[in-house]
Image 1 (cartoon, rainbow, N blue to C red):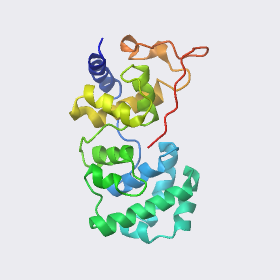
Image 2 (cartoon, rainbow, N blue to C red):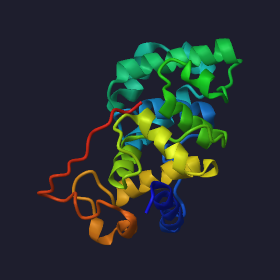
Image 3 (cartoon, rainbow, N blue to C red):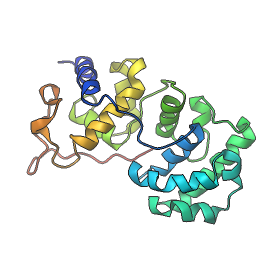
Length: 225
């Protein structure tokens, strides 16, 4: 089975397995999704969803967020980790949105990645989920891990993984692809001791059964961007 054939089989199986797969960061608009995604670096979506209701109640838009005090944002997001750097990036990105984009989150990959604290992964999340623009494939730790286990790529770098996936996943499925692999990674294909015995993808996974305790195959850690 080629990589493209394997990707096609995954797109056949996982939508039926996870028909409700979606972005699990709670948000009300593109700006809130941008902020939530910045907060999600080195942090779980569940933790982010605990802090954003109060954060967005106080600072619901770029204008109010840009005008907020650094310390006040830090206090609200402290539990997400790296809170000083995240607060600084959120304020700076908000200010840039107000000053350079008329208070609206840009719909362009280059303009988004030009915002402080916004890398390609964050930009892809916003474009795909807030605007329905298939500009790229989100590669987080789950997507990176599963893509290697399924032998869809041999790379560890997120940008190189994304390039490999974009060659074999139909463009209209780029946003969905990330949701499907993230959901599968959280519910079945765990980093340690994945549930290969009950895995829906076992028949098309070249490494099924090779990642349990005692296995010589070790999942590499990939930085989040």
